[in-house]
Picture 1 (cartoon, rainbow, N blue to C red):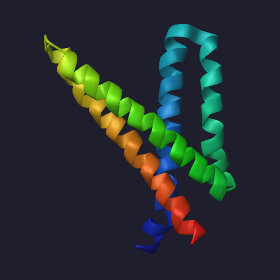
Picture 2 (cartoon, rainbow, N blue to C red):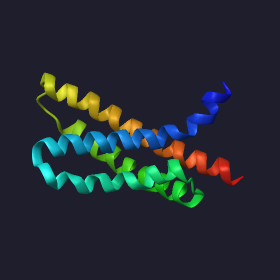
Picture 3 (tube, rainbow, N blue to C red):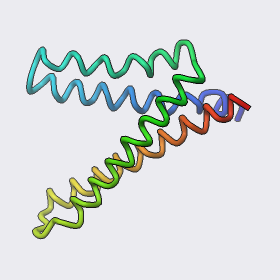
Amino acid sequence: MKLIHKYSKFIPYLYFIVVIVYWFTDVNRNSGVTAYPILLFGIPFLWQLLKPSKKLNFSLGITFVCISSYLILAYLSDLLNIVNLTITTKQFIVYGGLFVAANFGMALWMIRNSMRRSF
């Protein structure tokens, strides 16, 4: 149990690193060299794994809560305007909803970790 508690604080960072790597590989297949700047988005998360900083952790959490809130609003507006639901549309809605919910949850987890360390 102590091992799980010890490494659970790294889960949000690993999640966002995996999302960035997936995004990079998807864009790299289609666009080639133009995908490499995407890897720059992973630097703050790698930095948090190597040398944790309370301020960077809190700012990453707040930033991704704001982005995730915007994604939730965009997802809901897209969900409500769809008239013709095909199978691929339904799959997109499910996967998009899981992605948006996971982003929001991981961002809140980062904020919780930074608040826990500061007190």
